Picture 1 (cartoon, rainbow, N blue to C red):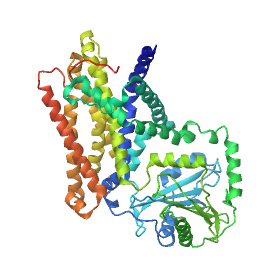
Picture 2 (spheres, rainbow, N blue to C red; picture 1 turned 90 degrees about the vertical axis):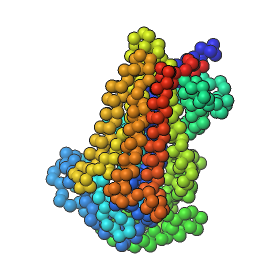
Picture 3 (cartoon, rainbow, N blue to C red; picture 1 turned 30 degrees about the horizontal axis):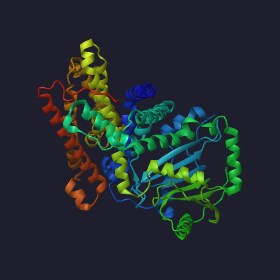
Picture 4 (cartoon, one colour; picture 1 turned 120 degrees about the horizontal axis):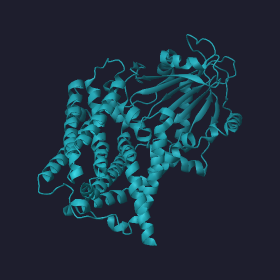
Amino acid sequence: MMQSFRQAMAWLHTWFGLVLGFVLMAAFFFGALSVFDREIDRWAIPSTRFEPQPMPSYEKILRPAFERMQPLPATVDAMRPRVDGPMPERFDAVVSWSAYTTHRDPVLQLFAGYEVPNAKDPEEAIWADATIDPRDGTLLPNDRLKVGSGFFYPMHYGLTLDWKNLGIWIVGFSALMMLVALVTGVVMHRKIFREFFTFRPAKGGLRSVLDLHNLTGVVALPFHFFFAFTGLLIFAATYYFPVGHTQLHDLHDLHAEVEARETGLPHTRAGVPAGLANVDAMVADAQRRWQAQDKAGDVGFLVLQHVGDANGYVSVYRAGTDRIALVGDGIHYNAATGELIHEDPASSAAGRVAEFLTGLHLQHFRHWLLRWMYVLGGLLGAVCIATGFLFFVEKRKRQHARQGQQGARVVDALAVTTVTGMVLAALGILVANRLLPEDLPARGDWERYAFWGTWLLAMLHAAWRSAPVARGLANPAWREQCAMIALLALAAVLLNWITTGDHLLRTIGAGYWPVAGVDLTLLAGGVVAALTARLLKRRAATASASPLAGAETTHA
């Protein structure tokens, strides 16, 4: 009975891993890149290549920038169908002004929300955003694609499929099934501790591939389980089970009103004009309060709610980079008088657990070694999935060749597309970023087209070159795409030098590691890809029918 149970677990592990592995590969790979999303942004947007800055003075920098902000014409046009009557030429009733930064951001993100007269939903606001240089308030181009935080980061949890949040649902389901695959993998491997120390590259063939699959799965098992689990938790209340905004909508609104009375933070505008006290003094007071509690005083988020209204208040949130838990430690002040209204109390036990799990997943803390461990964990997950694909194909392709079936060929082409093709797509967007003219209209869209176009070409190439797999041989697309990865990685580094003048000697000499780190990572990845291509070419030239030929083996 136990043997049949283990066989059932092996079936679940194999087919869940195969069907959903393509999604999980993207989640792991782009999740690893997202650990350094801000640094990739600096590489992609040369005008933002300066040192990270603290939250600037409200009176000198933020207020003038906020007062200049208005929704874009495209945003106004999109709002028109949800408004009864004409839209105003200028929006003056400010719902909120907010500024956000991190310890890795040299630039500052500003957001402004405005009431819309005659909106069909009175609670709906219209929004504007801007990016400024916090040193002097200079408005920076806001139409540049933030390749790291604006593309790679959402790719890892939503595949950039925004329609009905489809991508988030696909990744969420895949993460849930990944937990099943992890559990079934543990059940399958009775000698899991021994496999922690087992890798036999000298044996070659399927044995080495399976060893590497098991090793990367076992070594990073806690990482894989934790991130799949916490990713589901983070999105559960917002997307998967949004009962607070659906079935419990009225109760949710009532809770907001009760909370406003208890904390003294008004839920709505009073409709009575009021002035604004010195916000910088409020920020300084908040920092003194944090310091008295031995907390780092960096301001990460500043919010002005109901601006210009008697119910207005100012919230100052701590960046919380001194700890793993994602904390805000908000302190709130009356906007008109500057008096303290409310200081967020210590979280409950359940709240502290939630903060820790969320913070550990989103990694907003200052700890470079732990960040690199995140990258390693993500790449180990990608290697685990890639070797799973290879094992599936290599174990079956000779049998399929004898039977005239095309299943192994199809899976191999998809595996090439998902593994090397995805890396090529990531490099394609970086190369396009440095090649496209700075003043090109809709430049960010063209960069996205480069990403998807490169990935599509990689898929067509993998399918075109997969014919040998149907005869039980290796697909040459593996080594050819590895060689192209090496070329594109080198091209990206050279293009960064040519277009910005920031070569490695300059960036390393100046200690500007965001750009130097990206260049070094590109070169390291290129070297690994070149060595892999060379190894595959050498194996293809041997008497072996496949670079992965070897003794048949099974997961059991």
